[in-house]
Image 1 (cartoon, rainbow, N blue to C red):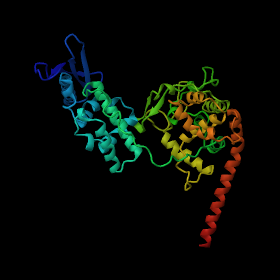
Image 2 (cartoon, rainbow, N blue to C red; image 1 turned 60 degrees about the horizontal axis):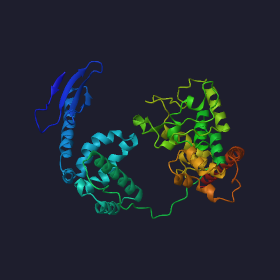
Image 3 (tube, rainbow, N blue to C red; image 1 turned 180 degrees about the horizontal axis):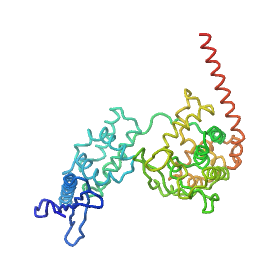
Image 4 (cartoon, rainbow, N blue to C red; image 1 turned 135 degrees about the vertical axis):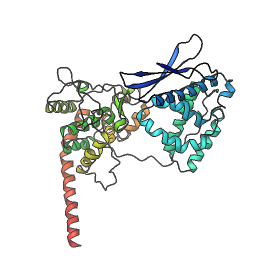
Length: 434
């Protein structure tokens, strides 16, 4: 073990120790410091195969911690004037907060910060940020072509960054600088999305190529699960130790990120952890697929990848492209039609919400079943059922809606197939005539 740096320099906080780990085959440069006399020593490790790189990374941490140490000892009125927005984002926020974000956020935040924050907010000292600056920033984004959803996202990210600055004591003030910034809204009326019914869900099940694809469709369309919740399911989440179907599905984890960055994470809200009832229709599909797979270990994944996936799970984006959209075409949603692309796998979840609305489930029960955080979201999801008083599905139980959907699905698929053949014949005749 060797020691680099030192505490003899009064302007520098802490010291750096290095040692080689034979077990891991790498160097560890450990920055260590004591926040105050009598306090325990804090250590921050920096591992790398090359000693020089590990020491360099530890040195950067030492510089940042030294700056923070001296900032904490500045008068409160001065702290936020010593650090600009970009300095804080590229320094302490990037080093401490950014690694804690979800993979999706880590992938998307940098582009938003670079495009919509750095040029306008970057040179502002944190202490000078306020509501007026925030509103002027919003106007600047609008002038440069940012749409309301983009502006709202940028504002939310900026608010999170400043909240972290307040927590770290880099910014001191009576309140949040952007707490009262005006949030833009979409001026265009909201477009009603195309709502799938149980006949569409069951028709999709009919045309799916494998039992596995059928079960994925049912879990989203008739149980209301998100794709991110379906992919990490294990057999123990659906089956009891004796191999019989559970009364409820265990949903306590989801995937986040794409490709090699995908990982299992906790669900976004406490309401996400839920136990929706497993319907007889879905339970039947679960048991059939379990038997088809040779009754694997209950700890194994239900939807395991057939390729060399780094986490063993199927790729949701690949399923949407190679399975879901071709199935949509087979039930009558043409690729060149107005609805193609607007109906995503997430619309299956909306179909479940609509079904529960027709069944007149209480809003709170629907909220718990779907894992929504607020009642407002739940109402928006099954608004069609709440407003459609004349529909003959109104008041029909979930089981009866599913039975009706299964009964109507074959005719829907048949009509779509006849329409496809008719168009092919017309195109052939037109080509011959030409």
